[in-house]
Image: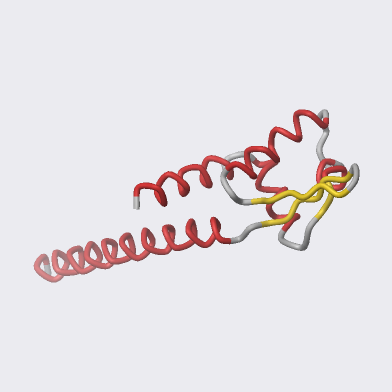
Length: 112
């Protein structure tokens, strides 16, 4: 469990950046070479490559080099782990809010 928690933290940390989120979204429609991924962003290629390194280090993307072209693809498993964590947190908070709602309704009934 601690290893999964560490990976989850790394995934969320990687997704805090809008450039990296945009790359993940783009890779959702299929693999792409670095040049294509970098095109929409106004930054030097070495700076953009750092974003790709962060995504690769947390396991969200994988790369393969063929000749001079490095192509990246999305690895969805870390996103599934994050989605499961968010789903558990949502269930906890919905349960708490339902309890609070019942409590407020009881107070209203008692006041009447």
